[in-house]
Image (tube, rainbow, N blue to C red; front, side, top):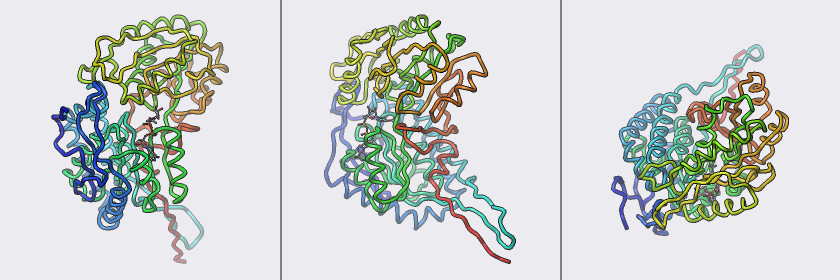
Amino acid sequence: MTAIPELWFDPSRCLIAGEWVKAAAGTLPLYDPSTGAEIGAIARGGATEIDAAVTAATEAFHGVWHRTPAVERGRILTRLGQLVLERVEALAMIEARDVGKPYKQARADAVALARYMEFYGGAADKLLGQTIPYMDGYTVYTLREPHGVTGHIVPWNYPMQIIGRSVGAALAAGNACVLKPAEDACLTALAFADLAKQAGLPDGVLNVVPGLGAEAGAALTAHPGLHHISFTGSVATGAAVQIAAGANVIPVTLELGGKSPQVVFDDADLDAALPFLVNAGIQNAGQTCSASSRILVQRARYDEVVEKMAARYGALRVGPAVDDLDVGPLISAKQKGLVSGFIEQGHDLQLAGQATLGDLPSGGYYVPPTLFAGVSPDHTLAQNEVFGPVQVVIPFEDEAEAIAIANGTDYGLVASVWTDSGARQMRLAKAIRAGQVFLNNYGAGGGVELPFGGIGKSGHGREKGFEALYGFTTLKTVAAFHG
Ligand code: TXE
């Protein structure tokens, strides 16, 4: 077993009430996706640790955090952002090892985590209420107040970014948090919580309980002491989380992935579009909620787009995270099985392009990035989230058909439109059902300022930007009668 040299804390413990504690059920093995080797152990948190964490958060909320001035909460988050920046290289190395993410992509996540702390640190004291003109003799105003104790269930694909957008906003709004990171990737969550302690976050305001979804995750969602749950993950688990939250009548924010299209019209600037068409599908080995897995191309440019995308696929380099190539391994043997199954389901399609897997560590969770063309919009590969480096190209005739195909899945997270026509850009931006629409780009650099979330099976509620802050508060109306 090779330890991870960058770790400065014991990864086999939970952080509860400011103490690093062992889980009653012991530990779970930790694997390196690049090699499949066991490289350590993480805590197997369960109902006992979750209960202790919710109790600690409740006490910290009432005892200190709720009464900490917004400006001071902001200062702590800003300091935390600074500590994250000072540790960027270490955090990136840990994430690369834990998630199998090529180093530069992991580094970008660490920088984004710092940026979330800067943004929400700066926003903490700008969360304003309103005064409402009302009847003579009254003064009416609204207060934005924290929910109390918020639960955060985070997946393994972008741990640092998702913790940043969710925990960062919740803390800025004055909530105390219980974070359940994914069993496949919890190291940077623990590192972040340790840095938060160093930044001066009072004990118990942020508690981290790693563990299995069915154990720690289910215990958290069912806990009657929670006041809000933020979940990012699969549709099936998200639905279960919503049902559990319903039993306690608390609000949930769900971000459940997508089948996001890029729509390429015949007047598009293809040279500008091409890098985005492919990168948005293979970044993080396709394990991105906002991955673009459907490329819709108008008939006149269809052959050209397929040919150029296929050439890029042929040139993609796949390898261990530390080699920092274009595509790393998938997160787990389970995910490799899922994605390989999807690729097999494309046997009736045109295999337009595929990367070659070279000499790779035999135990690593690699799949070849794969491009299918001539795909009908109702094919299983055009309807279901693959969550691997697999894209389909679908031809269309005109604008009406493009809109119908773009909107023709259960999801609605992100979309982009490539066209020179300003009028068409405006029409498509309105017609496409998605939480974010990009015109002549994809993702806009993932800005922390930009509200993000889905409709349909992609979930509900908004993260990032100020919208997330509103979501982590409850609005109180105060009506004073003074005659
Ligand atoms: O997800 P889960 P998995 C999609 C993607 C992927 C599929 C399966 O399509 O192929 O989901 O991935 C916790 N109560 N996305 O199995 O189960 C779990 O411990 C409470 C898209 O990893 O949803 C982890 O912390 N929590 C997505 C988190 O939920 C539970 C990102 C996600 O796990 C739980 C990840 C339970 N009963 C996967 N069961 C995106 N939107 O980007 C599990 N968890």
